[in-house]
Image 1 (tube, rainbow, N blue to C red):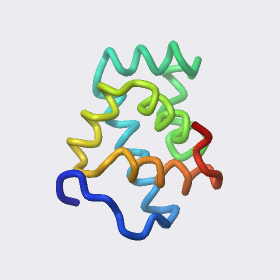
Image 2: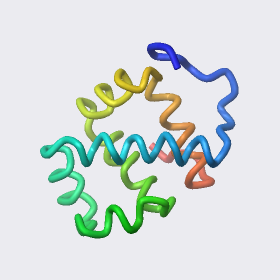
Image 3: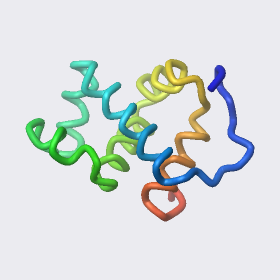
Length: 101
């Protein structure tokens, strides 16, 4: 995707949503500060991240973490080339519910 692309169809297939969320997880795990903050905020055990990588609840938690930290959110979206609105659609596809914020 190009820089800050806003998807015209906000319905994202679950496999696409999972792939994007896995990239978000890789982004967080690849940044020591982000990883420490994720662990502190969610209480997830570092050893379980790999085991639970395909768990939609964990992936939604990672996306929620990004939404709670604008610096990481903007950086991740710039790297991936899409807008935060698209990431919200990804979250909705994984959780099956609209974001409540």
